Amino acid sequence: MESTFHSWAGAAWADWLFMLGLLGIGLALTAGVALRLAAFAGTVMMALMWVAEWPPAKHLSDGSASMSTNPFADYHLVYAVVLIALAAVSAGNVFGLGRLWARLPIVRDHAWLR
Image (cartoon, rainbow, N blue to C red):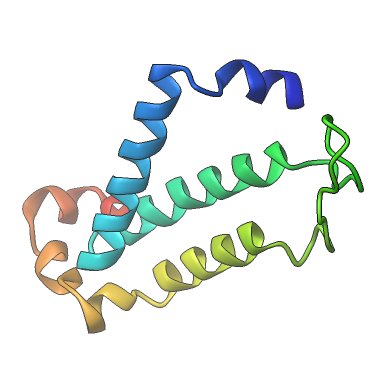
């Protein structure tokens, strides 16, 4: 995947999408709203960042040490599990605006927005 991600690196569209995605996920998690959507988007983003470092080689393409560790205890995967857990237990209902969010008509009609 190195060549694919290298071709995306530094492209304005990739930078903007990445930063807007981080902003949206961060705002949703901070406010405790749309946790299912934020967990899904965050998990996809973490998976893409995990794949960008795959395979966990001992050396990078430039010859420097990669400092790779266990690929299954990687922080990207841990963060993805935490995102899913926050959505699964509806953490926004207790620590955020999740209950108010759930009362909105559009959210009541579309459960995936919770």
